[in-house]
Amino acid sequence: SLAPPMMRQVPQGFDGTVSFASDLSTEAARRATAALDAETVSRVTSASDYGGLVCLMNIIGPKLTVQMNMEAKALRQSLQPSTYWNRWQEGRGDAYRLIDKETCELMGYSALTFAVHLLAAVCQRLDELGRGGSTGVRPTSKLQLACFPAGSEGYVAHTDGSALEELEDSMPPDQRAMISSRRVTAILYLNDHWDESYDGALRAYGAESRAEDSYVDALPHGGSLILFRSRDVIHEVRPTSHDRYALTMWYVT
Ligand SMILES: O=C(O)CCC(=O)C(=O)O
Ligand SMILES: [Fe+2]
Image (cartoon, rainbow, N blue to C red; front, side, top):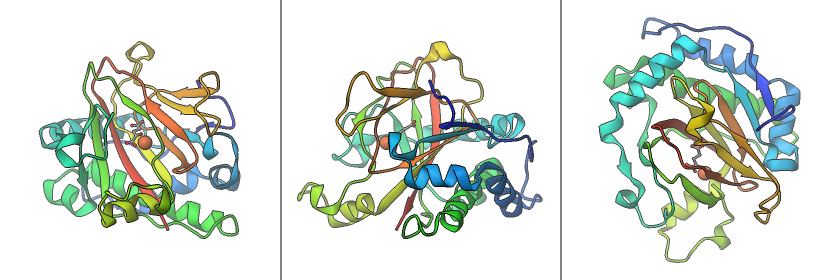
């Protein structure tokens, strides 16, 4: 499991059930500021171990996490297995869809709308505090809402980003462009309650080659946010005994 500096507890703050009457973008920006100080940002942008992996526990409070979980569950039927979407995604046992802020708003899912604001605000914070470290990152409008169903085998070891020339020629150009643009992976867990016995950990390997003896595990506790550099961490999802929800945004250049 994770230890400092990979693990941070975000102080209590904005929580409770939200509606569209709340100023979601302002609260999201405040929450991103509370969650990411210069040290955390510097770890994500430049630490060599585990591709700058950091887990920000409690970036979303427990009450709002319950609402996010209910909204994610309500979208369960619209998620499809990866093989439904394309054939370059072998070895993953989840069902997913792409979703954006406007869709969340139209469907009336205010907690997920807040989550999209938050992931974009975290990107902005990384970009602001991380200048000098890299060329900057920007959020993407399409996020991945995924559920590994109870009993799923998880997701085999992989990286989320690769240089263009490393990708298969047979992959469509737009797909290749998307994967090669990814710099930072931001995963927000939408689970209401997660027990260690459910497993479903995100396992990240420390070395470039997948050394079996150097890895860390992070359980998908609801309201926690994982960040790492997309090209620099081989990671997998462990088998899970319970439905496991996550919302992912990739920060790109
Ligand atoms: O849900 C997670 O913890 C990771 C999922 C993942 O690796 C991916 O979608 O690329
Ligand atoms: Fe991944």
